[in-house]
Image (tube, rainbow, N blue to C red; front, side, top):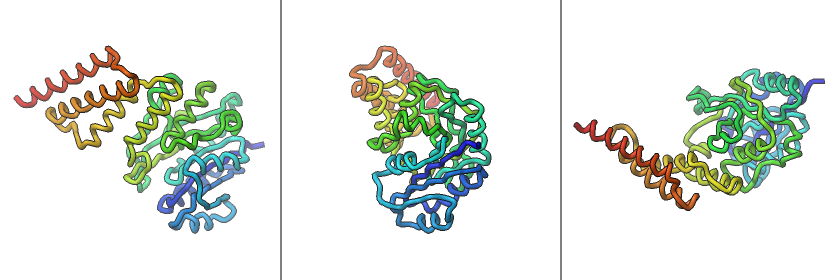
Amino acid sequence: MKTKISIVTPSYNQGHFLRRTLDSIIEQNVEGLELIVFDGGSTDDSVEILESYGDKLFYTSEKDEGQSDAVNKGFTRASGEIIGWLNSDDIYYPNALNSVLEVFEKYPEVDVIYGKADHIDESDKYMEDYYTEKWDYERLKEVCYICQPAVFFRKSVIEQYGGLNKDLNYCMDYEFWLRIGKDKPFYYLEQKLAGSRLYVENKTLGNRVAVHKEIISMIKEKFKTVPERWIYNLAHVLAEEEGLTRTNGTENYKFVRTMVKKSAFLFFIYQKHIPIRQFKEMMSWLRHAKRMASEEAR
């Protein structure tokens, strides 16, 4: 008997992308595919689009508590042994689901699979590879190298670990991977499975400071400490939000100086002190940036 897979799609006013998302799922040509859409009461043409698919999918459109709530409802309703979660502005690449199912069928001990992915633009065009690494749980604490639409897991994972944390607005997927990965190693499928869309209105791209602050708070609550990399990431975003660039030596020095100041402040906020090693690291950045600016000015 062929393994059944359920794909859960949360959606809200994404009519512009929704049909492309749904077609990328249905065109996988997977036997027994279950497609579940929980729409948050869209006011655009989303419902009309969903209606046009008839019995190819199940959907409901009603006010919910946000993306995590919609995904969790989908997880609960899913009847497949394998579950995927594809947001209504992302897409699967051809043959992605068959490749995933082959791995699950070949390795019954594997509970979670993640693959490679791309960042794509509003027209589905390739922008860049999504940064991905081989599985390493300790490394995952420092870098979220797992692309959400390229992740698949057995329903038993939901039964064991529960669904998404509804208190999180941006990093609910990252928290979910960290929660599961502590006990279960993920299988890395070195194949591009999905396109993750980046555009101005994208929730994550449009709220980078809030995203990074939520990630840091989540990690601190979970592990009682914050990796230096996440502190530097936030400082980098804060510098960019001030309009600073690194287009030349002088501008780069201003950027680095601002980033160091913000990093020092964030270390006191999240770690109560600046580790000596990190202080020396930041001072070396400043010296290097100042030297480069001076050489350029000659």
